[in-house]
Length: 525
Picture 1 (cartoon, rainbow, N blue to C red):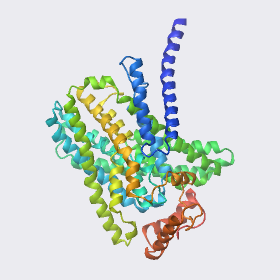
Picture 2: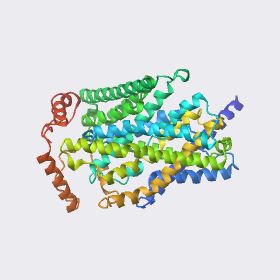
Picture 3: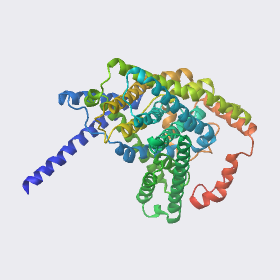
Picture 4: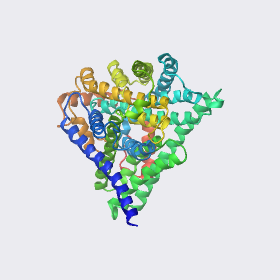
């Protein structure tokens, strides 16, 4: 009996030690990130990766080259626990007016762009890998080439969004932010659709993939909308805040997580579901809770999302030094370098292949709607192209899901693909991430503030601030004049009756009285 207790104690102790170490390293990331807040070249993602590399190096020395990990990565851990708060917070904090005003443009970049990028990366890797001596791929592996395309088409726009200011470049910010979220969701949905293909019956299955994609996309969105509306109705009907603000905060968190898990249970896209659930909650449910709950929910959701993102980038830095995966790779250093270079080149080309043509098409649509002031300039197109070059958490998770089992693989081909993904994520995040701030400051000289507007945005509400005055004592004269000109030009030149106008009318008349929101009519704003 005593021996069993000692064995259980030792087993539990082995679990506690690595978790404690990882939490300590996470705290170190936060401290270093704060100290480098105003640095011109470094952002929080880069800090987490560099700290992960340093921690992995120390572990290699301590274990004498046996391991560089504190914890073992599990793709299910990522998809079940880490990804939901990141995506939900994106939907909860999004500025809905700008997001839906540019909805068609965002959907073109986030959906059509993923298909174009995936096709280029898939076709290029299919053609180039054999030329680089990366052989031995089976039919199932070549089907995985499509998965490779989706893995390397998933973007990470955090580096760019940390520099852009929503108040100064609302069009650019909304496109980069919206496209980043929709891009990740589309990549995961397309990845899951490809996984359902039967290798023995590939002929004529292109329409099947497209049909599965459309079904997953629409069904997942509908589930998220329904969950958000149900949460808003419950909060409005039962008035939780009269007795406890803790209950209403807990209900919002649990309903958001429940929407994600229901989507996974029904084999839908949890990313899309929880994203639109976040949008609906911020639009309706957020207005049904007490003032203290509004402040708390905003900061709690942002905090959990931030910790999850830091956790992922920290692990990527450690995993780059995983000796076992590098030992399994049987290719020469020259072949590996060639594969890395080809993948990065395909990412660059695949991104450019849809950003510039779709931007021209979006500009033509805007000109037909007499919105010349909202056109995507060439400098904006460069930033949008650059913003999607970084690869991050979703790419890593999809790669582990495709090529490992609970983070472990004994197949040389799979090990090679994991190392490829890690190197691409490291290179794009470090190199392209280092250059993001200087590039944006060069392309947008007026955008030279540090994070003034970002912090101002965080202090605001996730609801739409449609009553923002034309002039503000907290901002420069140039910003005030620019805002006044834009507001007056929109008031004079824009058509009075648009889709947004009719939605506002319907929203104020039917949706808000039932699900919650400001009682005054804002349809004329």
